[in-house]
Length: 290
Image (cartoon, rainbow, N blue to C red):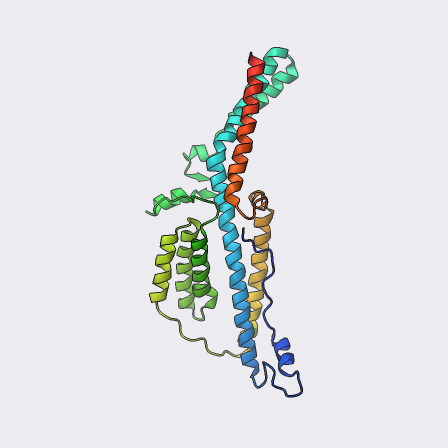
């Protein structure tokens, strides 16, 4: 599992570059003869690339968290429902045997968990929850095809294509507002394709980007603008760090950390555990009702 836990490589600062350039008796360091703007520009570019790599790691992890959550509900939800039903039947059988008021109370509580009050999902027929429209419902309303994820983690080739596209087309590399908007719209499509693990579509997007307009070469900017750019990149990194922490500390994020190498296998492992619990409950219920 790719998580943005490690800090990206720190960009080379103008101060460190200047000291490097002045080291040595001959004065032939890496920064020798450079203007301050050139050293600043190199620092900005290094910071941009570090931030992009961090965003790639964060988006990759976010997709895994979201896919794991949806597949967990889809594949394991019926097993959890079966366990709740068996627990209710066991509690009811126990209460019928003992006649104890406390056992009857426990049986009523267990049955209530099986038949909860209708929630937003039921009222809107599975089209939305408390957070809004489900992705499938939104896709229907926007004439997009409904393609839920098949796996928690997209395939290796899809991940490779995704990283390459983000490194080339990231909006933070744009210098003009129109170019930033074009990149943002394109990356939105890239993220959606990656979330579904759609390797074919990622290939098409890669070809589309390669055939698209080539942005103008970045020109050297004034020192004040470059310093402002470095400050913005630092603030962006701080915001992403907060988002990464929220994902890692979430319930699903914690589950994913149990299987960093193969999150899809974790679903199968949980399913086996639930099946064993179902078998135990069924045996207990059979004993009580025999």
